[in-house]
Length: 226
Image (cartoon, rainbow, N blue to C red; front, side):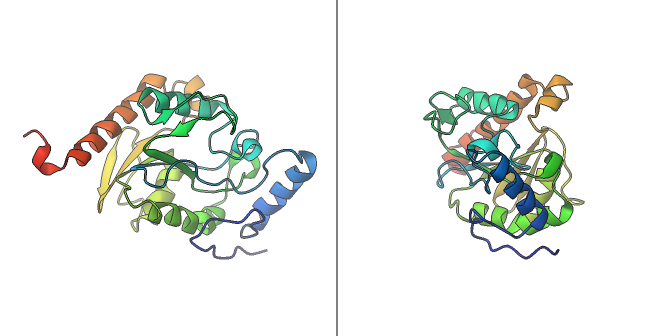
């Protein structure tokens, strides 16, 4: 089986570009017919200035609910932080019908389908990258991207036209690529937080930097303090 090149538009519900992922998805459609079990679309307004890029849907998280980072531990920390910084409003209840709205932010994944053992192959990441490029292109006000984890960082860098060897991943770091500022954070997974690779305070510090940057870019150079 070979991977086909994906178009820049979002995948349809029966996307077959990655045979292994399609087979895994079909297996879970049979096991859990009430789950979403399809490529997970981006979430949030298209006019947002911040795009958050994760790796891939979690099996019992976004693959089940159909909304990025919804229904698993990573979403608990992510949405709590977005609410804290005014980048979301409402109440996060780990359900796509909880009424939560994103404000000035949008979330997508580098790979749209759930991978076995939460590990997409390099070829699958490449095959899905046009969807990431398309997600960026459809946001006219995009100014900042937050990559959650090194793999999300690497595919985002390549989607922006550079190579990871020139733009290295570092938690809390940032890189200016054309008119986009790319921020990095360790992924907000249960493993990273339980081992304290990432603490809530570390995560909030990244968002604080992003919000300060976006506030300054909104004012424009003439309005910024010397």
